[in-house]
Amino acid sequence: MIRVVLIVAVAWAALWSAAQAVAHPGHGSRKTTSQSSEAAHEPNERTWRLSGTSSLSGSFVALRDGQVQIRRDDESLVSVKLSELVEADQEWVTIRMGQIRQANEEQLAMELPLLLAQADQRKPRGGAKAEANNVPEMAKAFDAFVKLKAINTRWDERYFYVESNGIPAHQMMVGITAWQQQVPLPQKYFGDNAWQIPLHPVPAKKPQTAKGNFLRGAIALAANGIPIFNPLNNRGDDAYLFGELDDFGGHCGRADDYHYHIAPVHLEKTVGKGLPIAYALDGYPIYGYEEPDGSPVKGLDAFNGHKDKDGNYHYHATKKYPYLNGGFYGEVVERDGQVDPQPRAEPMRPSLPPMKDAKIVDFQETKPGSYVLTYDIKGKKGTVSYTLGADGSAAFTFTDTTGKSTNETFTAKRRGGGGGGRDRQPPPPPPRKGDNPPPRDGERPPRNDDRPPPRDDGRPGPESKGTTTSRPKSNLPQLAVISSSVDAKGFLSVDCTCDGASQSPGVEWKNAPKGTKSFAVSLWHTAPDQEKSYWVLYDIPANVTQIAKNSKGAGKVGINDRRRTEFDPMCSKGPGVKTYHITVFALSVDQLPKLTPDKASRAALLEATKGVTLAEGTFDFQYERKK
Image 1 (spheres, rainbow, N blue to C red):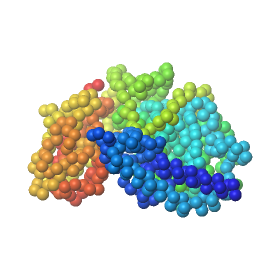
Image 2 (cartoon, helix red, strand yellow):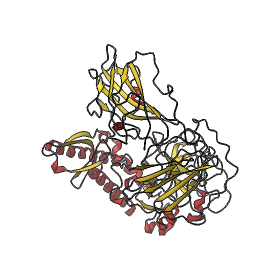
Image 3 (tube, rainbow, N blue to C red):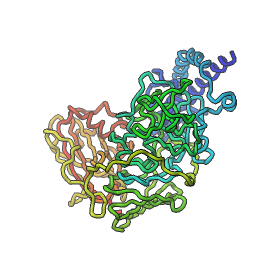
């Protein structure tokens, strides 16, 4: 009886807390029970008017202690006193909170019988001691690294949270033979951007394979707080066999975020025998090559998992694909090709193309916060040296195989809504003796590389100036497109780059056919490994045929590849001249109703303009970073 009363009390406390505090997922990663109702999905985006003449636009997130939290278009979170809003907005918040409260009550009424039924079935693991201390069994796997001050952990009724800076104690990068010029930079996996793992995993009705799915983001988290990505890279290739991983099975992504792609079995030495080396993001543990009791592993399913004698499911590491969990036995939410929610990695500098024939032979921390990566190309060595600043910046020195050096400093661009008061960053743990890479069977095959040929010094060569395969091709009439921000030699003005004022370029077009009702603009570039988008404009009125440099009022601004509704200035550090494109579309509709600024990517624009494009034109220009 006491247990039933406790469950009801907790459920009503959660309902009241949600109704008072949460009306919209403030970060896209915390979903409340109320969101399952129709009322909770009512649009929160509006223009808020403050006392006087000021106003701001954004989405309603929460009402807490008399403060209204609003998320702006740039994802920053601001708080405004409820009393400072005009009367109409105060009334809207009051009504909205009533809807949230009602939605919670209705949802609780449906879920309470299930909660009561599960209460007697759910017994905390770890026995009476663990129950008394309220410490989940999952915490044991991470405890060794908590004691080393490499990570922080916490938990609530549903999730186990792990905070880290994304930098492991072991040596990184050495052994990589397919390198895309990334280096390890600390990440801010703290506060609301921490990793979260379900404490009570639920078997999926339809388990999902990771082969061809979940090619973005992490699928598991190692005991040292380092994320583990799909063993297949985002092209669907085995990252280990392709030579992209270091001796510990990791490398850096395009945000310079270090992560593993295979099971980190070397962690067994630290976590101890019999404990998981990682947890999949569905909440099930991942063990090493042996069972927890040391016996051989038998009878693994397609996901590299099975149940123990007590009926508890877990995954295992293997020396061949899929190396760890080959999918998800448990329930997960897939969104945009990755498990959702999960933390963001914050890029500090642009991603670069692969460096042909480069093998990383050394990576050292020369002093706290200073690192040197050494690579070898056919017997000649080059280095990337960088030092992290107290303000979050990073000062780089690039020395190629000819001895030529260039310097560049990058500044972190932090987005809002992050860790808040819990944004505590433990320092990177010092390297430990005995951190040796795990033994593996066989050797990596020779690298199969069809990337652009290098320069004589081993650096990637310039891109070809021919028409790219991603350029829009059609038999439609052609617009004449020019840019006042490009000089007579075809090079972009420094004002439109990160070396200058970061201003959007001036664009002008003519020869629009009859029936044109609006225009759209896309500034893009095809790199060796991906197509990049820097600027999207749409719903430009038909009477507009030019956009001034740094103009702010021409149509609606979509999102660039950094998912920001703004122009992303040219900022490439890779050597050689790059070719970029500005495409203008003449459309037969006044507006593209399916597009909203937060979702209007280049891909979405191309999809939305299908069937309504009367003419188009593309203007090519060049840019080469001088610094």
